[in-house]
Length: 313
Image (cartoon, rainbow, N blue to C red; front, side, top):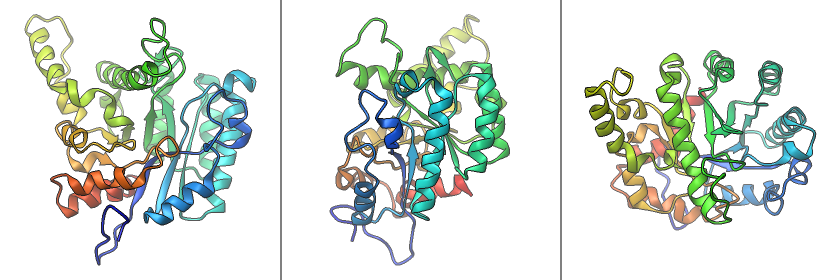
């Protein structure tokens, strides 16, 4: 039995943590925040064993390391190398996601290194100094992701997210501005046609896409109103149709209501369980959300791991 949570069926189903973090000590030491617990792979493996988590995706939480290490190039080289080494040191337990410098010159070189290092996903921030993922420099990234069947995970930007110029607060910024930045990223990618241009890319957005589950209906009603007056370009479909094709991770949520709301944006085939370790180490309650909802067993298995495993094949 999964302690305090779910029960494995006789037909074995893989459980994958789609949202966890590991900061190599060489990088963590150059950050203001990501020190304690953020380089503790043994702790993560112990929790994975305790709660029968087969694998975990290692994502970059975004940080200020590039400001203290001579730029993004150095951070990417060290981070991607160390993540690759950790994956190889624990066969079958971790899935590595590589990071990229937000500049056209460095992207091509680092994409090749990511492939050579055997990393299976790309980990991007929702924005980089105000530039969102609709910027043309990311077209090469998405073309690479499609050609190599690499899912692209989008994590909140914690440096200068939307609203930071007006409010900087140790509680309000991470609770509101970080997730708003993810929602704005999705909106800008939709409006600029990125999702239609790269239909083969599996985009995964953290935290259920920020506030997307709450504003999905408003997106459609406002779009319809503005289209009638020709105030907004023709997207060819309602925004909600675009959202339904994206993937979203649960980011350690312990709210059944939040999960149910997210199911109005996209179906269970597009949701992924994630712990948000080490920020959240309460695996018991975040796993139990799936068993407490109205989901049937096969649907629960999709969210717990089958969806991500399909994306990685």
